[in-house]
Length: 188
Image (cartoon, rainbow, N blue to C red):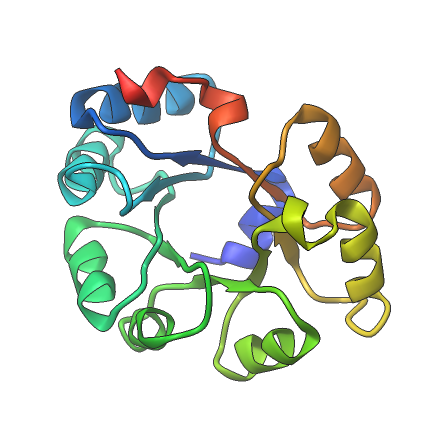
């Protein structure tokens, strides 16, 4: 999967997490039915690996499906076995390195210029500014784009419709949106 091209083409990653695995699965399938191409199931949700497995089975092999909050090497192996096509991390660590070793493209969480440089050196296909709202919002993205004008940034965290428009106008490749997009659908 060419994650960078998919992000540039679709501009949105829908983030699904919740306490109810059945509701989370229904949310993933509803998003896919509505034409959302890039969906991430966060491992912070209850029984997320089963949600990923069942979503992969329902969506088939041609539909991109990501796994988020990939923290450890064990997480990376588990999401790979579950059928994820890409991994999303909140930072740089063993989850990112192992995902890359397994051939999964990674949207790696970064906050600082040093982390941007490190993520790219480690092979991240795209860079998740997280938590974007707390980092300074679209103004922070504009500042990062100064030294990194060609990096594929994806702000995540506190992104709603208005913020999404502002981030995209500031040069984001795509945005990640969770609860503002799906509301409490994944929680029951």
